[in-house]
Image 1 (cartoon, rainbow, N blue to C red):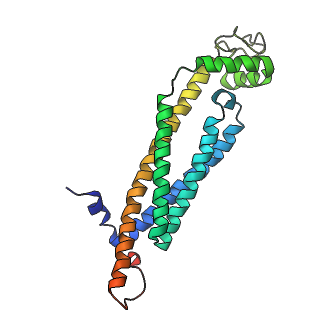
Image 2: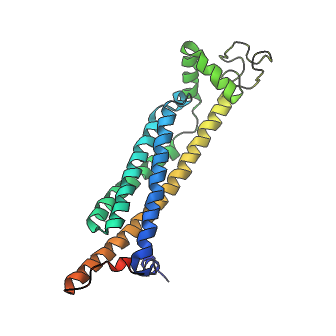
Amino acid sequence: MATVRDFLNGFNEGKWLRITHMLLNAVAATAGIFFLIAGIADLYNVYEVFGGKTLPILYILIGGLVTFISLVGIIGSAKESQYIFGTYSGLLALLVIIQIIGLMVIWLRPLDIEDKFSNVWEKLYEDDQDTIKYIEKDLKCCGFKSPVDMPVPAHCSVKKHYGFTTGCLEPLEHQWNTRRQSILWVGFAMVSAQIVALLMGAELVRRFRRTREGYQRVPGQAEGSPLLRG
């Protein structure tokens, strides 16, 4: 049965393995930049009051780390440096562990968030009714659990105001759970890609080391890495 190493050995003396690894890290760096932008945008999102600042800050931190580590991987591939790759592999392994822990926390987090949302809505009702108006218009709802539960304006279910006859709790919970599921799927995809990058990086380090040892054993060998030969 073919092993991972047997499959990787088919990559034309490492040339295409190195190029594939660089492309994979380029995609990861792009995803990291996207996470950075999404995190910054979420900090100023009106719905941030329900989810708190934890997720946006997590987006920013993960996005920054993914972008930085991916760039290190690209430099390591370009320079064929086992030392840069050693740093890259260590940082990426640590990042994978952190992300797995984060995904487990999100997965195990209770789905029943009604009490938390109720407290936030009550505070908004007392201090910031303009935000409630925005949410009601955006989600096409009226009041929290029902049109008579802290609505803004008081008769927002009446057609001359908004005419919405359902409360906002259900669409808020749906929005939250959809976002939670998206984070889990994206996180799973990123971790899977990073594990593949780790395996490819380890194989590249092995080949870099073997190539360097070959140069040391054969004096006067022509310059140029066999990794670049077609």
